[in-house]
Length: 461
Ligand code: FAD
Image 1 (tube, rainbow, N blue to C red):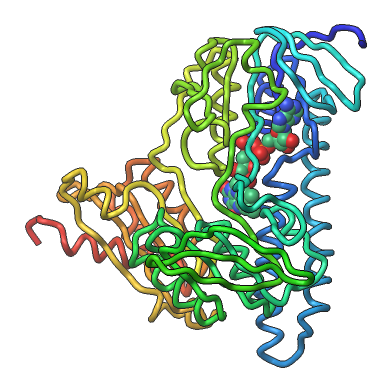
Image 2 (image 1 turned 30 degrees about the horizontal axis):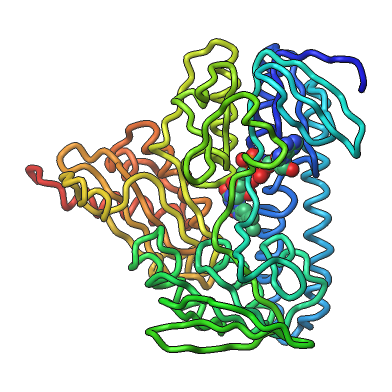
């Protein structure tokens, strides 16, 4: 065992939660170390957001080339995988560089807490003990593995699905959440015959039905078949294929494909050798760590952020909480406020939501107006040949304060930030309507949706 090192802040896990927390902690003048048992950058950089968006972008490029008969699917996919890996390596290298330049010590290995102020870092059997004044737990999550569908061979998790060496001829996706839809559509664009099997009534259940409709339409155009209300029951492995048995409307069905991809959610990494039991940290029934508005756990000097805490498992949520936790440790009055937390699906067309939806506002019986505008006659959307979709703004009746917004359409992922800013600043639909948006841009649709909301206000006209 090497000599005991001591830090003020020990961050466990280097995903978008951990590395941002370590950076902020160091910027605030605290001696900081970050521990990572796998690759710097966590799930997001290595097997999540970045590689998935890289492959999705390549699938779109391939689709355009295919339309002019200039693309070969097999070659394009091999190139896409190489490009993706280049981007991942660059991003992961960037995290290491950021840590080093900020003066954060990087400890390679798996951290186990042995008591409230000590952790052992184990790297291939070699152990190092480190003591800390504060800890930020950012150990992230892993794909949920279903008993009947153990990962391996022809049963893939999102991790393996992002690294297939060749385009599969066919793929069954179990779970129609955002990861299943994004990866399913990406493969369909490369020519894979894709079926999405969803247990619930519809795919992307976190979004309103009318918002999801254009995505479902495009999925069908891409050749994706969607079976809802379907319960996957078992698989039979054949030599070169796999057969999935499922039930729907009390009838048994089966379908055969090259691979089955299981995307039914993620499980927090709060078990295993992390040693939470040694510090007495309680977990919720879902294995999550409860935190207060400063990301502080039940043990005041231990903080938890990202996928191991309540709320959506998203990279930007992890990074947001990271800054709050580090600032709280530094004695600042920072606290979380999730009212402007965007959710994005990188499908075609893209989906994005921030704040309250119309349904949620109605459930709360809030007096609201809905401003709507479509991409159909927007010059930029037409030029991009992507005029499908619309923007919806939920505003408070009377004051016009923006409470929420939803977008389905091209670049929804980028456009949503303007609406997140509006919510964050307490802006009104007048503020959005009076902001000069350059022409011709997609942002003009936000302005038009705001103008539409103003016309519906109960005010003297
Ligand atoms: P993670 O990124 O999971 O990082 C945790 C790190 O901790 C890991 O590297 C792990 O090895 C390490 N670790 C765990 N235990 C220990 C230990 N005991 N000792 C040392 N190290 C440890 N989110 C978005 O916002 N946008 C997207 O577009 C998006 N796309 C996604 C696509 C896919 C396919 C997947 C799977 C996820 C996607 N996500 C996306 C979700 C996003 O990746 C996660 O929400 C995010 O990575 C969570 O960050 P985190 O810091 O909490 O943990």
